[in-house]
Amino acid sequence: MMIAWFLLTRVVFPLPSSTPFSGKEFIQSEIKKLGPMSTEEKRVTAVFVSFALLLMTRKERLFGPEVDLFGWSYYLDKLLAAAGSSPVGFMIDDGSVSVAVALTLFMIPAAKENGGRLMDWEDAKRVPWGILLLFGGGLAIAKGFGTSGLSDYIAAQLATLLGDAEQLVIVMSTVAFITGLTEVASNTATITLAVPIMASPFPRLSRLILCYF
Image (tube, rainbow, N blue to C red; front, side):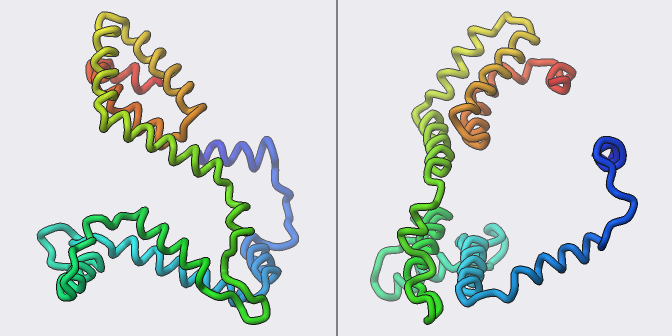
């Protein structure tokens, strides 16, 4: 990587010998152009920090069963039990927290001079929903493959089909399959789907071939 950086900055696209100001000065000048944070930006920052803290402290036991350090889901169940309600901590996951925090953006008011809320439906419509649906749909399909047992079935059929094939043929077939799959699913979904399928034929392959690819 250092060699690539040197070639790009010294040979292919050489930097000028003298620049009007250093990188630090450039960054500081760009920050000044942004101006002070608005009221809305401060409130969104507070929501984001709260969101991160909620995610990091959600688990019932933050550092495993050996450490008695509990997360907020544990205390929420304690509070509900004291009120005579059923526990809900086992139903809360990262997705639940994400949706709840996103909804608060529609409730928290913006600055008085602007009116409205931090987010309204006009802002929400500009979110690239297609990308979110593609990413989430890929993960849902991968989860469905695993839960239904389809991944195990495909892996067994693949092991039978490629049982006597050359190692190079197995690797090339896998590369073609994964490349095609990434055209319709995200990289994360592709990995989630492909790893259980490829777990059967790959252990017997030569490490040299795998390293080459």
